[in-house]
Amino acid sequence: MTGTFDLTLVAVSYAISVFGSYTGLVLAGQITNLRNAMDRVWLVFAAVALGGGAIWSMHFIGMIAYKAPIPVSYDATLTIVSMLVAILFVGIGLYLVIGQRQMKIATLVGAGVIMGLGVAGMHYTGMYAIQMSGEMHHDEVIVAISLVIAVVASIAALWIAFTMRKTWQKLISAFVMGVAVCGMHYTAMSGMSMTHDHDSAFMTTSTILPTELAGYIVVATVGVLAAALLSTFAKELRTS
Image 1 (cartoon, rainbow, N blue to C red):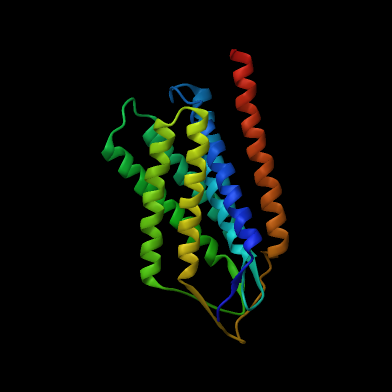
Image 2 (image 1 turned 45 degrees about the horizontal axis):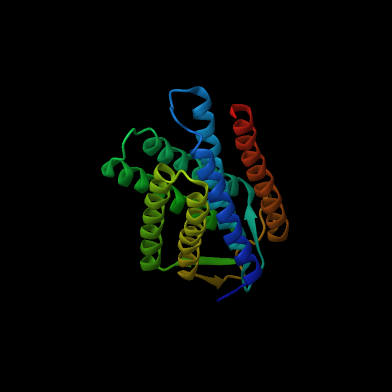
């Protein structure tokens, strides 16, 4: 069985990814010394913005944009786990790179691989959270390609977070990162197929309906990212 995509939600997923990327870059730009407790707080905020906003939120809006030929819902526990995976691995990547005084290629690549594996892990954990009366299959070649994209995109994102300091650079970089994040997700989705199984269970006791999930994610993500940006503006006002 094959499904279709709601192009409006696809556009929304890209917009969320750009907003999350920009917010994450702004927050990462506040970090000057990770030995400082407040800078470690900024690191957590940046990981939430990039991992939770730019990557995880984009992923699930993109999932909802896919109109499957059979009804689907999402396991709430695995959905939350997938979000935490994205935030954790992005945070580790940022910590390894931003903690450097000078850019080291080996560290950048290593951190990118860790972050990329986390992004891919988030994606396929989120896919596994799907509940439906059928089975899901993944093309192994497409899975490998999506993993490479995730790693390359992560390396690029970490390099941008380390080097881009001006507002216009961060803004342009956010649009580029949005393309990379969406590219990984929709490449992975292209390798997914479903087979209908009348005997398999559709709903579990802990599920979220797609229409509800879309609204929750958009409202929560925009609210959190906007609050994070406001916190950086407030900091600049206090120091000016």
